[in-house]
Length: 442
Ligand SMILES: Cc1ncc(COP(=O)(O)O)c(C=O)c1O
Image (cartoon, rainbow, N blue to C red; front, side):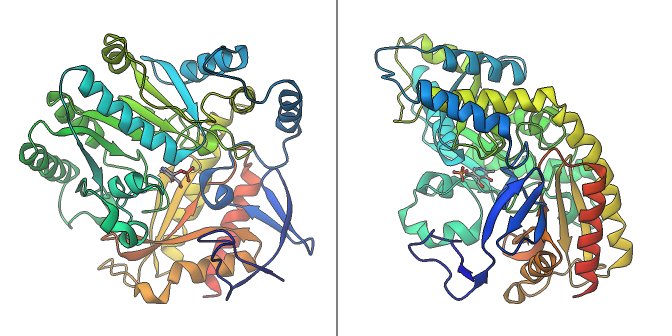
């Protein structure tokens, strides 16, 4: 019927695989050309769709603002739409984040967060050049974002172009050594981080992590005190902590931002995806006052800026989406319906020998599949078990995202669930039943 555009959009699509043609979406549903209805359980590949498809309110905002002013000469004017949006965004952010700046997506948000960290240190008279990232994290698809990211399947092809930033292990409680307490596990990970910091004395500008790791690991959250310990260590070396909230922001995990689960332990937030719910490409960064004050004290501007930074069209859509999230209590809904769905999915562990773990927070959930539940051995990556589940789910009317890498960053199969935050308990029950049926057919 039609061709895949996965991988490199049209330039080198996966021409071997046939996909149904999609026509339109409404709320949590997607419809193909044959009228078949699907529940969008992954929020448009991954955690983009926060307020639901086909939202008329946002469509009207787009139309109105495009008719009024889409872009303006930012070097000569300021603009109310932008000011209003940045104010609202900072009010939604944790305390101490009082300025923000917009760009067009997650990769740009991450790049600009790193640039901000670099300029922070330069402003204080130090040139630091290294980032510490974590294996099993995805931070975007530019060379820098791939380099600091740790998703081996995506970065491997480009390693010749990288300057090799530093990587430490992710905090992945399901995969910690048998018999190890959470505290011992955290201390082991912190020691690893400390070794890297000592080895690269005074050259580390920042540490970056996803509060809950999305597609790379399948909604893996850390042990309780992990981020607090990371932050304490980083602070003691003036290393800034960047939270990549591209997936976990805007209510996805049942809090405004993923880091809010951990006493707001970040200095810079990189934002995208749910920020505009896919109605227009948008990303943003915001930083704690002390970071920006260090730069402001030099009287230098932030050395960045792109054509689509701070445009009123994006600001108006961003504000519309944020207001929709607040007006409809979608953060709370994410928590309530997320807990409900997680409890239901957890029963699959009893029912199926190959369901190893069900995890996540809010409407950001993951299921890890294993060949052997006792040993947690994974399936052979070549068998692409998660992709088999994904295909079965599609047949049964669920759009899911199956991925690999949740075991040692190379093996492991998981499903990432990140449906629109408008999901009801009825929809959640349908998702559970659809997954259960699909697993039963494997
Ligand atoms: C955690 C995370 N960071 C950054 C990105 C990159 O965002 P974008 O694809 O909008 O450039 C993604 C995209 O999936 C992501 O999941």
